[in-house]
Length: 112
Length: 116
Image (tube, rainbow over all chains, first blue to last red; front, side, top):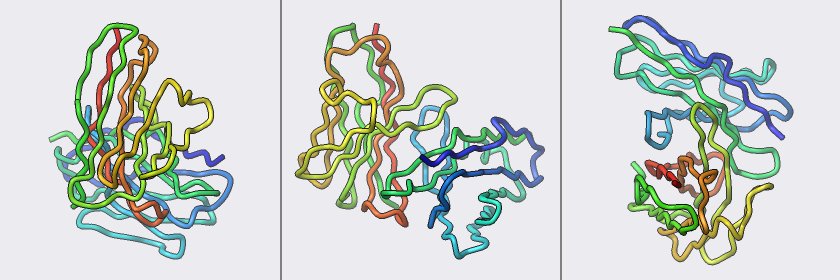
């Protein structure tokens, strides 16, 4: 089965800096990879989806890259703000169906 | 954006009782709904997949007689935790999607279940 590793459990950064989160997957290469944001006690919220033939995807201050050779996705939050503090989850679909497997998440704390 | 409503958000009950959690897609017809369980600082673990009008598909290790799922319409799925015990205490989250890998899942806000 697909194993998804988000290398950092926690990331503390200063407001205005760029946060970079890593997501590595093993076994098969997914056609799509998704990123979600989860606040404490809430359900995840979809942020971005990137396809295997896309190197990079952007949405406002967010940027996602997808390197199928390294089996890795990077998630960047530029000009970070305290409101960006949350847990960010990486997810890919399983090899044999459309159901998602999630990483454990990286908790980002942005200090004012 | 797509809105999924989950109710109740918080339940405390005695061991042995059954608890029903509702998941509704408010502004779109969800082909598929998913039920997850999440322990503190851990990943979301898929429990079962619910398709309207058919039996739910359970993940390996999930007891279908323990976690009853009913998907009565394209906008409503329910999860009933039967004869709940303290080890069933967890955060249960539902999501809805159109069922394709290129479609995002839209999550409810979860139900915190505490069994005394």
